[in-house]
Image 1 (tube, rainbow, N blue to C red):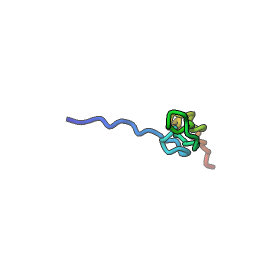
Image 2 (image 1 turned 60 degrees about the horizontal axis):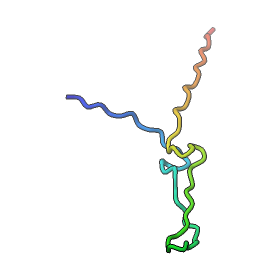
Image 3 (image 1 turned 135 degrees about the horizontal axis):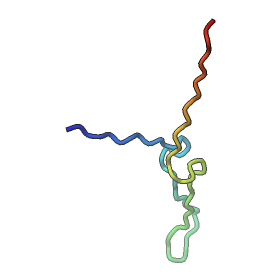
Image 4 (image 1 turned 180 degrees about the vertical axis):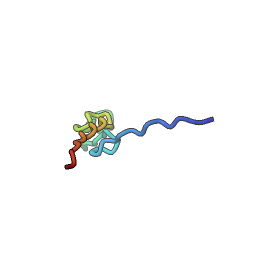
Length: 64
């Protein structure tokens, strides 16, 4: 029986599919944990993928 292959996703070229990272600020909090910042990829807005590119328009020329 044939199996369907899911369509490939278009990964964001800026974050390569890892849209959010936690960066350690170096600050130690009172409970002993480190303060972190959650940063998301701006171009893909934290989704990790990009929209499909619009198809290029085809120009037909008449040959004389």
